[in-house]
Image (cartoon, rainbow, N blue to C red):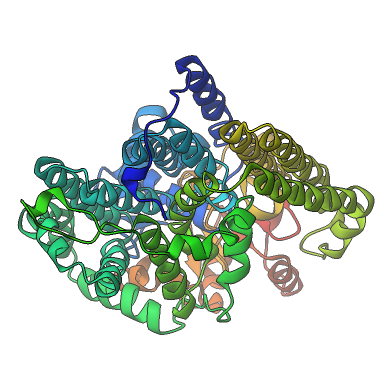
Length: 576
């Protein structure tokens, strides 16, 4: 297996060619972050925390629906609040942080791969592979905290490879390791201790397997830990001094109890992440699969410049480290009692770099055959969704997801599969003509556009997954909501509602993730529906949202209410 040093600089790609690709990629990547309505629960939740932070000016204590909310650290809340302060509340402002940090991650992949391998074809392939990786594309365009976390963990991973590169000088080793420590601090501020636990465990495994003990001296623990604490510690200290309940809730409940118990009711079978990993790795899965064994093979030992004269150290095993990174993160979340699809997002940059390097070592004929296989799968899926799209939509339809709405998603899925298939056919043709990096770019763009189209199409379901339409429909016919009047959320909470109302709502017999906040400020909620009913009857004016079943029950009981609007999942009423 070739070492880092076995890659000699190859042809330099045209600056105009790279600039053109960057412009197109940028336009496609950011094309839909304003277009789509916020989806419950995560997108509404993280947009609303940022909105309330921008409105209150309290940058220490995050609040959701007016209640203290300590489930996650504040870095993304700060970024979102800053965007809202400068540009106003918008879907763009809500999603800019995950979209921009992951976009920067793709650019970083190009730059880092070029420095590591001295070959712009490998660099372009690495960036294209990441930019067209299905799991990375989809999760980067959804407003969750995992996009920023994945970006900083990728910066740490690539910074570590640059720091430990056999050609790195002492100064480069020190500076890149400081970048690593800073990236870990930002990862912790993005999503908690997971930002340091995952890379720390992977490095420990790598050291145990490779027995490269001299590497410990090249990690710069002293300076690095000081920089880490300088960046990460101030907010944790400030929020703990301001809120006595923070430390126990954040460090015990949100880390150990979340991992070890089903307290968050996000469980899943042991194989939960297998289909997510396989689908998320597309279209590169076949190229990764045929090279896994080769990627694990050990490189030859080389003299490490940091060891001094005559010093010999094991060569850094970059591909083995990438596989360890992927495998550990996958297994870590597989055994966790809390599972969500976006949790394994940090594995996709590692797999993308692995695939890009290994595709340079495969014959064009094999690459072409694999691409033709993807084209055949895409063609088969396209035939299925064209012929049976309506029938498939009917299978997913139910009372809460009417066929008349679900069917509108079908043309978008057809267009998405078509884009993927065209990209695969173009790649297969280009691989045969030895245009390796161009073929990878073609396949990446086909996959990227397919992902964007699928997400844009999901907006056809936004009447089911977002309160945007029901709120706008009421405002169009009844005028703006009076924010001075009470607004009750009965035995439910749609996380997108406060963002579109531009105000919190009063929770009635609903706790879930608001337990800490309601315990701290119980006067902001109503414990039982029976306690709410007399308040509602006594009101002169007010609003409430509930599910259709509760509306029918309350109407039968004779509670005074007038429908302002309803959809298959919600009813908004007024007391007038």
